[in-house]
Image (cartoon, rainbow, N blue to C red; front, side, top):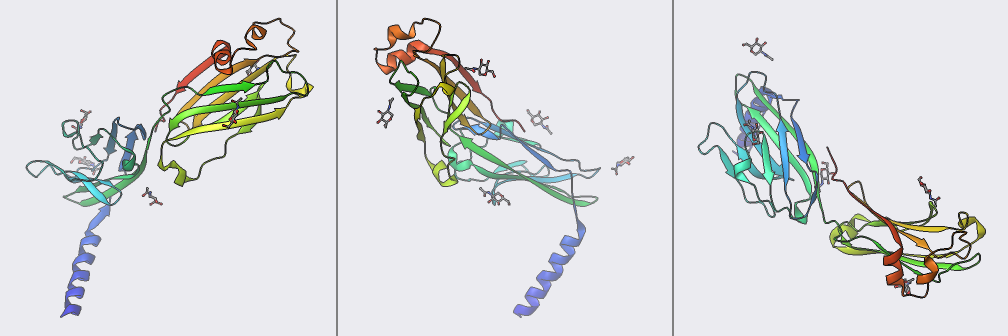
Length: 273
Ligand SMILES: *[C@@H]1O[C@H](CO)[C@@H](O)[C@H](O)[C@H]1NC(C)=O
Ligand SMILES: *[C@@H]1O[C@H](CO)[C@@H](O)[C@H](O)[C@H]1NC(C)=O
Ligand SMILES: *[C@@H]1O[C@H](CO)[C@@H](O)[C@H](O)[C@H]1NC(C)=O
Ligand SMILES: *[C@@H]1O[C@H](CO)[C@@H](O)[C@H](O)[C@H]1NC(C)=O
Ligand SMILES: *[C@@H]1O[C@H](CO)[C@@H](O)[C@H](O)[C@H]1NC(C)=O
């Protein structure tokens, strides 16, 4: 009896698959696809049914369906509970879904699956990745010891960037040369919000001084979505231009840092397509 059952199932499945043609032009776009935690994102599904009528558009996070649009049903839309997913039903329809108040657990694969019901049965699916991040709430900061600096001195500096997820990668540049860089993180370390810190200990030689000047930059980056930098003009005894630096040189590192920061570039870009 069981065999018969399986046989029937295969027969039905075979007929079903034979009649369903692929719908090749289903295209999912997620905007933004790198989302700041607690904000929202719009998922658009475009498709061309080629004179067929729409049967349904199903939306999945991983394997779990969270939203379905079926024009022949009443109501046309159904929302299925999936942890962390908040569908904004008023702004969702047959071609888009808006998600609100997005949390970290929502990161992952999203799919839209389109099916037509006649005259041809067509079905197509597209999948894209959404990642949820937390940008640092403040700028990176630099602390330096030992100013004013001369040939042979050890430059000791720390750069730190407030908590983010993933943790920001830090790079120190001295007169535009990279002198230190934080280790890239393994994906496992993306799990929590974390400060990012980088220490620099560098014996200075004549080579490091750009006609006497020392400009130290710390760049904080998160993939393509975030880049900020702190820039500090260090006190240098070789600087030909008499400077205010010496006036601050015995102040604490914090106040000297605040006074001497030359440029802070805030450049937050949300990744496109
Ligand atoms: C759609 O239908 C129109 C009119 O019935 C026909 O001219 C056109 O070729 C059809 N398009 C496709 C892609 O089948
Ligand atoms: C779905 O809603 C968006 C935004 O309101 C709108 O631009 C789009 O045309 C709608 N799609 C359909 C098929 O009505
Ligand atoms: C997304 O899909 C790809 C390819 O199917 C798979 O390798 C990856 O593990 C999936 N990612 C998640 C977070 O499920
Ligand atoms: C840099 O950080 C280390 C470790 O936290 C600390 O011991 C050192 O004093 C710091 N240096 C500066 C210049 O702040
Ligand atoms: C670093 O490079 C920028 C542009 O590439 C240039 O304007 C600047 O003068 C350079 N700074 C130093 C200290 O060499």
